[in-house]
Image 1 (cartoon, rainbow, N blue to C red):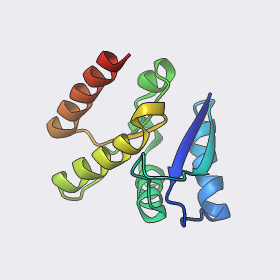
Image 2 (image 1 turned 135 degrees about the vertical axis):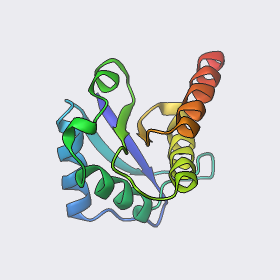
Image 3 (image 1 turned 90 degrees about the vertical axis):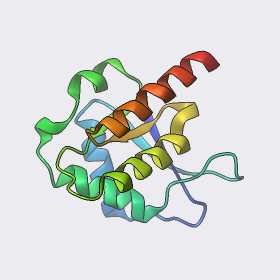
Length: 131
Protein backbone atom coordinates (compact mmCIF):
# COMPACT_ATOMS: atom_id res chain seq x y z
CA UNK A 1 0.00 0.00 0.00
CA UNK A 2 1.25 3.47 -0.83
CA UNK A 3 0.74 6.29 1.66
CA UNK A 4 0.82 9.80 0.26
CA UNK A 5 1.95 12.86 2.15
CA UNK A 6 0.71 16.07 0.59
CA UNK A 7 2.95 19.08 1.13
CA UNK A 8 2.55 22.77 0.51
CA UNK A 9 3.57 23.66 -3.07
CA UNK A 10 6.77 25.38 -1.87
CA UNK A 11 7.75 22.69 0.66
CA UNK A 12 10.73 20.57 -0.34
CA UNK A 13 11.53 17.44 1.69
CA UNK A 14 15.24 16.77 2.21
CA UNK A 15 16.77 13.38 1.39
CA UNK A 16 16.90 12.78 5.16
CA UNK A 17 13.16 13.52 5.47
CA UNK A 18 12.41 11.06 2.67
CA UNK A 19 14.72 8.34 4.06
CA UNK A 20 13.28 8.66 7.57
CA UNK A 21 9.66 8.60 6.41
CA UNK A 22 10.33 5.59 4.17
CA UNK A 23 12.04 3.72 7.01
CA UNK A 24 8.99 4.27 9.22
CA UNK A 25 6.46 3.28 6.57
CA UNK A 26 8.42 0.23 5.32
CA UNK A 27 8.36 -1.09 8.87
CA UNK A 28 4.65 -1.63 8.21
CA UNK A 29 5.00 -2.82 4.63
CA UNK A 30 3.98 0.51 3.14
CA UNK A 31 5.67 2.92 0.77
CA UNK A 32 5.46 6.68 1.09
CA UNK A 33 5.26 9.25 -1.68
CA UNK A 34 5.72 12.97 -1.18
CA UNK A 35 3.50 15.03 -3.46
CA UNK A 36 2.92 18.74 -3.93
CA UNK A 37 -0.79 19.40 -4.29
CA UNK A 38 -1.79 22.21 -6.59
CA UNK A 39 -4.89 24.20 -5.71
CA UNK A 40 -6.57 24.85 -2.41
CA UNK A 41 -8.85 21.85 -1.99
CA UNK A 42 -6.80 20.48 0.90
CA UNK A 43 -4.89 22.26 3.65
CA UNK A 44 -1.41 20.91 2.92
CA UNK A 45 1.23 19.94 5.46
CA UNK A 46 4.26 22.17 6.00
CA UNK A 47 7.70 20.57 6.11
CA UNK A 48 8.19 21.83 9.68
CA UNK A 49 5.07 20.02 10.83
CA UNK A 50 6.09 16.87 8.97
CA UNK A 51 9.59 16.97 10.48
CA UNK A 52 8.10 17.54 13.92
CA UNK A 53 5.84 14.52 13.43
CA UNK A 54 8.70 12.31 12.21
CA UNK A 55 10.98 13.46 15.05
CA UNK A 56 8.36 12.67 17.67
CA UNK A 57 7.90 9.23 16.16
CA UNK A 58 11.57 8.33 15.82
CA UNK A 59 12.37 9.72 19.27
CA UNK A 60 10.00 7.24 20.88
CA UNK A 61 9.88 3.50 21.27
CA UNK A 62 8.63 1.44 18.34
CA UNK A 63 6.28 -0.33 20.77
CA UNK A 64 4.18 2.85 20.93
CA UNK A 65 2.97 2.16 17.39
CA UNK A 66 -0.63 1.01 17.18
CA UNK A 67 0.39 -2.01 15.12
CA UNK A 68 -3.04 -3.63 14.95
CA UNK A 69 -4.58 -0.44 13.58
CA UNK A 70 -1.86 -0.16 10.95
CA UNK A 71 -2.37 -3.74 9.82
CA UNK A 72 -6.15 -3.45 9.48
CA UNK A 73 -6.42 0.14 8.26
CA UNK A 74 -5.45 1.93 5.05
CA UNK A 75 -4.35 4.75 7.36
CA UNK A 76 -0.90 4.85 8.85
CA UNK A 77 -1.35 5.68 12.50
CA UNK A 78 1.61 6.90 14.53
CA UNK A 79 1.03 7.02 18.27
CA UNK A 80 2.39 10.12 20.00
CA UNK A 81 2.45 8.46 23.42
CA UNK A 82 5.83 10.06 24.15
CA UNK A 83 4.84 13.58 23.16
CA UNK A 84 4.99 15.79 26.26
CA UNK A 85 3.81 19.05 24.71
CA UNK A 86 0.59 20.94 25.26
CA UNK A 87 -2.46 18.73 24.81
CA UNK A 88 -4.33 21.28 22.71
CA UNK A 89 -1.36 21.72 20.37
CA UNK A 90 -1.16 17.99 19.69
CA UNK A 91 -4.91 17.81 19.08
CA UNK A 92 -4.73 20.78 16.71
CA UNK A 93 -1.77 19.26 14.84
CA UNK A 94 -3.63 15.97 14.55
CA UNK A 95 -6.71 17.78 13.26
CA UNK A 96 -4.71 19.66 10.62
CA UNK A 97 -2.95 16.51 9.46
CA UNK A 98 -6.17 14.54 9.41
CA UNK A 99 -8.01 17.19 7.42
CA UNK A 100 -5.15 17.38 4.94
CA UNK A 101 -5.44 13.67 4.26
CA UNK A 102 -8.97 12.67 5.22
CA UNK A 103 -10.36 12.11 1.75
CA UNK A 104 -7.56 9.83 0.58
CA UNK A 105 -6.96 8.26 4.01
CA UNK A 106 -3.19 8.40 3.96
CA UNK A 107 -1.25 9.77 6.94
CA UNK A 108 -2.80 10.12 10.36
CA UNK A 109 -0.79 10.98 13.46
CA UNK A 110 -2.33 10.35 16.83
CA UNK A 111 -1.55 11.35 20.40
CA UNK A 112 -3.29 9.28 23.05
CA UNK A 113 -5.78 11.63 24.66
CA UNK A 114 -9.51 11.76 25.14
CA UNK A 115 -9.72 14.91 23.03
CA UNK A 116 -7.96 13.32 20.05
CA UNK A 117 -9.75 10.00 20.46
CA UNK A 118 -13.08 11.83 20.38
CA UNK A 119 -11.98 13.73 17.26
CA UNK A 120 -10.99 10.47 15.57
CA UNK A 121 -14.37 8.89 16.30
CA UNK A 122 -16.26 11.93 15.00
CA UNK A 123 -14.30 12.01 11.75
CA UNK A 124 -14.46 8.26 11.18
CA UNK A 125 -18.24 8.52 11.47
CA UNK A 126 -18.26 11.45 9.01
CA UNK A 127 -16.09 9.47 6.57
CA UNK A 128 -18.44 6.47 6.80
CA UNK A 129 -21.45 8.67 6.10
CA UNK A 130 -19.73 10.18 3.04
CA UNK A 131 -19.29 6.71 1.50
